[in-house]
Length: 275
Image 1: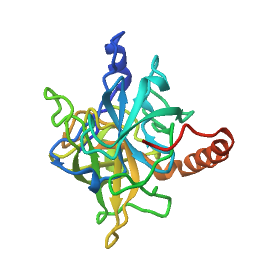
Image 2: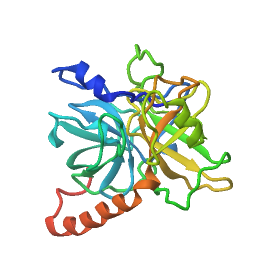
Image 3: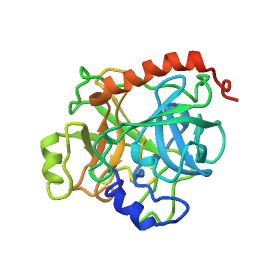
């Protein structure tokens, strides 16, 4: 499944002064699933409407794409639903305490496209709600790595049907960086902070942005978060793989942010655990 977050800046400009921005990214060619199979999946919502996916990575934190948050909207405009197969019902709905976008995020090139979401409450882990471990430099993608993308995004490039009411997933394969750079050589640079994945007829699309790309190494039952749905040209177009933010490339930044907030949360207190 390819990412359809291509040229987000152009979409924002086209949206003009409309109340809700147009986000890219969706599951194309995927299958309906249950949140218990993807318990780290979260729905980021703007004024109660699903706009992006995210991954639970800790008691207070989600990891998503920076392009999911654009002016003039601020923390109070957003909410997050977790532990639910449907983005509009079930699970728990939490407010956001802070959005921490990467300081080097570039809207034009989609480089450094990641953001941490600090939740206004501590999560209680259940069968439907779990954190996913982060991939590191030692976790190398190979042809044998099984990759899955999940989300509530569009199921076709036109998106006439809107976002999916229920969670879907699709399996994709890692695309070598040189092949991906060549595919996008006339579009945008694919940097070392990005990774690519694709499979014919399968991709992510609008509404999947910020969602998790989780990989399982051969003979391993433990998945890790390798990527974040970021951008791409079209959806499920064979010549254009989906482009994801490479989580391993940002481990130092992520770990530093989590460490700093660990102390801050102890000092500042919380609104309470999820209800």
